[in-house]
Image 1 (cartoon, rainbow, N blue to C red):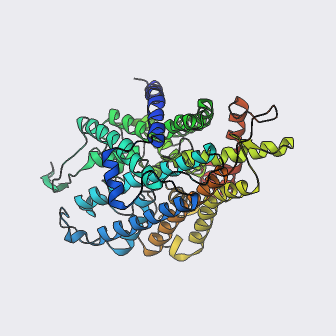
Image 2 (image 1 turned 45 degrees about the vertical axis):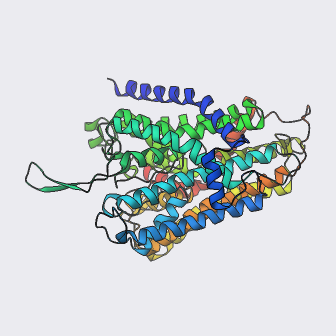
Length: 554
């Protein structure tokens, strides 16, 4: 089949599956977050942790619950890794070193899943299942919970309550993430993914050498890895490994899992605020950026600018032949536009402009559709900024969903937008200035070496987790610096998002008038898309000019 046609059919099938899932999944999540009834299992969990399931929290209490849960989760996972050699199913692996344990704990708790180790040769099965995979459920649920709290900020009338974090967390895990993950784990097993508790098997190759083939609970971790936009793979090669991603069917299925909750949350938002058109507006912006990114990365990787590329027919270095260019670039665009980091090809081997697009995707704040929950509250903050800018242009007090946007709201929104670029650019600058940074991990020099460092900080701060493979980050300096970037990049935006939610919830809704900006029109879609590009994307333009642009244009 013609490669272009094959790529188009893959994209068409993916879009069709996402369209079919949009309404039922979005409505189901809205029901989950608004239903007054508690399941028996949920009531048991509330009693166990001492929570009144019918009580609500102020934004400050909600935030403290998020921070406390994250802090305890980091400590638990760190201890789990450090005690691995004393646990069941350790496979004989020693305790994880302190630096790697800290980095990994911060990574999985923040939904980043950046891995500075090879999973199959470092972590035992129990740590993978009860440590890493549990955090993949929990971190994804935290993101959706914060998004739900921000939505309630728009819907509440003179209230200082945003729901209950513990109720949101429990419901999202039990009613949404767990059942969907179980169903798709079974599909992955049927598709050829591995699922067992075996030790590694030693086989003799055709040339007489010995090779260790590790097994493990791969399919169950793979499902939540993609569904929860986590990205941490069981194997070092991630979804390029045939045990995690055996064939083109499972590859397309995994791309679907990366995107389905992020897009469906637009429907959830529309239903919770009482206007499905508001959800479609956000969906239109997300879809616009996703289509543009996937198209551009595919275009750049099909260019034949070198001898090897002309012979192969495309830039096939670092890509699996069983997926080809379309399956690889569709995955790359989707994983960098969400906070996933799962990869089925090596981004470091992409063309300069193709790799640059992957970096730019993360710099947009991963709002197309972004991570589970984080993408929705990220684009809502940008929508607030868009409405405020439009209000300044016409000399009118801006209103969004019936709430006035004053100085307090804009301070929270501005701090949200500025936090991530500040961490990325300062972290990259320090790494390039210190010998422990550029001298302790960069395997390449020049613009590509700079791109590797820029990619690393962009990835961890945006809680993505993918990487350019040409950078070594195993030194204590890198483990510590990137771990801190993950925590600050995850938790500080949540602080500002919840602060914005609390400020909005206290307001009395104002009636819509003839002068109110219509936020469901094509004009607003264009304005919001422009704000994403100008306010967010161009913040990083000087850094991109030093790395991927300089490499691609020389």
